[in-house]
Length: 183
Image (cartoon, rainbow, N blue to C red; front, side, top):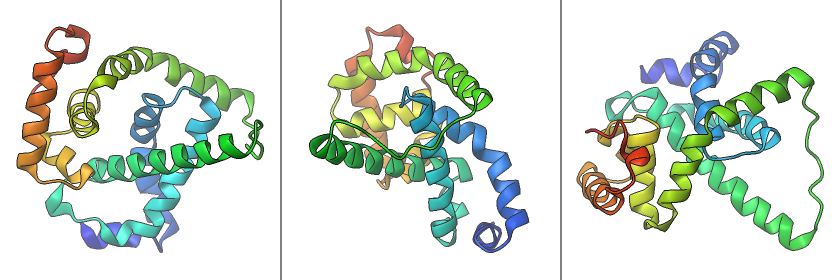
């Protein structure tokens, strides 16, 4: 599998197949965390550009492709938030966004609307420490196993389990956050 992943960086056909296999999951992941369709579209593109650059680092024995992609997406979101903060500090206007056609905009708005409940859950989890919140998001909302969440976050599985346990204890009174929580 690792050889197959490295191939996506040099073989356009392999990359297209990989992209088609995962673009919807990556878009949903980002739409749960970002409510602007233009930013979601830009971040999806950035994630797959980053995948091209880091395909050689994927290790199947550590987790699934989707767990690896979610790790790339989390780093991409963090980088975007840092850039946005710097832009905000420098100027009131954000320029340079590519224009989305009507169909792209409608599709992304539908995705964003579909993820409204997840964003509500994120708001409820805002008081958790970052490490606990990150593990909870990946396991409960993004449906990764604890092992995959640990891989996406770059932490040990035991650490992820402890953080998940603490987060669940803190949020026990919020059933819409805990629906589907297992593992």
